[in-house]
Length: 101
Image (cartoon, rainbow, N blue to C red; front, side):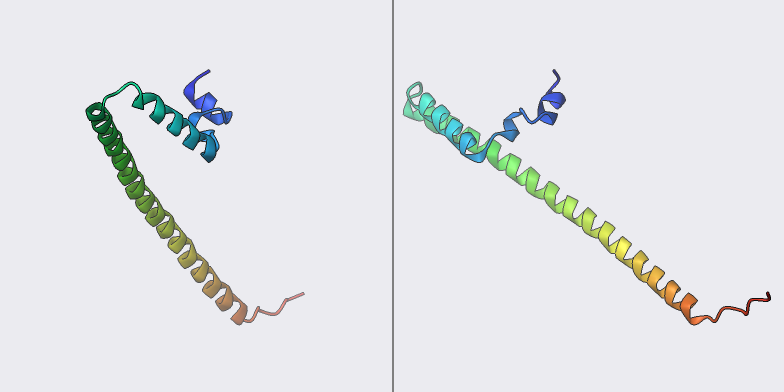
């Protein structure tokens, strides 16, 4: 089974409930505490925080750009809808020629 198939079936890491993710992080943190001295804990903790900050910064910028793109598309659809409404109003205001039958 490929990684994509695992995620598609809802069995991936990112499909875990929030409480379980927090519990796993807590268990892993305490497991590492017993294996590392204070300097190692501090170094590893700072490094993991850096990774988290990079991920958060990247995701925030990606969300901003994605929201802008969606907003631009929505604005374009709204402009097109307004143009169609104007055209429809013009068509309704024009009287139809009499039926020659």
